[in-house]
Image (tube, rainbow, N blue to C red; front, top):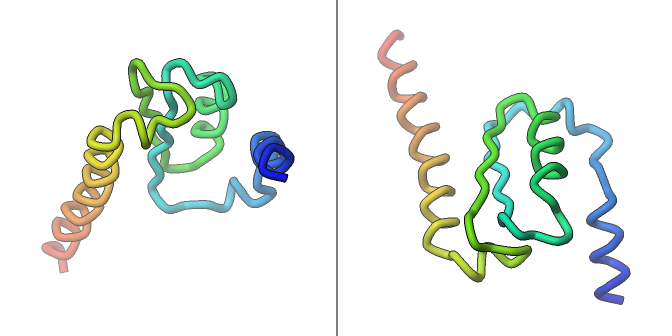
Length: 92
């Protein structure tokens, strides 16, 4: 069951991907055999406000292999949004 669900998710593309407008960061492991860098790049390109980050020396379990890097990327995304909102509020 796990394998079937994993394969299903790997080939699934959301039908509403073009309507996603929130800023996104797509992380992929340099050596991921399932979600290749090209696949991640294609997915990232379909999102309006996206950044692709390739984690060196990682495979599909990038969040387990490099948890500090992934956490730092997530925090950077959140902090960037907070800074932007504060700067925009200063114009009111």
